[in-house]
Image (cartoon, rainbow, N blue to C red; front, side, top):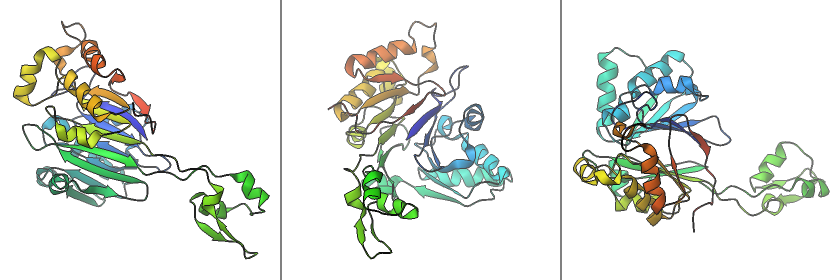
Length: 318
């Protein structure tokens, strides 16, 4: 999986940081999933190498404007382009009504199917939100001023590497049959032999895992959802010295994010959703928040707009 940050500021955009949005490009399929969609997200798409036409799913954490104001415009533009096969949306109970009101009042027509999924009951019951042959998505409630949810993607284990030389030694003719064998399926050849693809593949390879967690005060449920994940993207709105403000507004400090990463034993932590009060040149800067977090969880990075990275499976710190 490849992650691209399209917005890393909290509340309002700055000259260098737009408001919240993170895109995930799935491996081996032309598909994008988007987590939050603050105002201006479609402009951020235009500045990146991502293709909006590949958008398939959108996961909204909560209904504050810096996380949803960009969604109606993005969906409308996708409709005008006429190259979408449909989008599934996931989020709080209010998401469907919000979109209906905005699109109807602006006479915006969406020329492709949209389905909105309410995540509250799924999160409360700790059930699977979405699953297909390759991925599984779960969510959990967070501790914010309005209903908010964190999301986790787990890529399912992949078949082991296919031994093409062994296949040639067994006189298995190349072609589409190799794809079936790579998936570990049993295949009957024209000469009557039945070949078990599992015997031509090495050990299964672990998939990557990713957690997106914002906005929230320090949360035990976030720790539980994040356990063993390869990558945790967590809000760090405030510096440790402003913890009282964080408690009042139910946001996390840099140290709360790091504590979550440490207790969940994740592979890597990335701080995002930074308050504009810490812009470079001020008394406290984003690098100060990064250093605070690294003192607790050393494998921490600071997000910036258009930062792009691959999630490497099986790299948790244990």
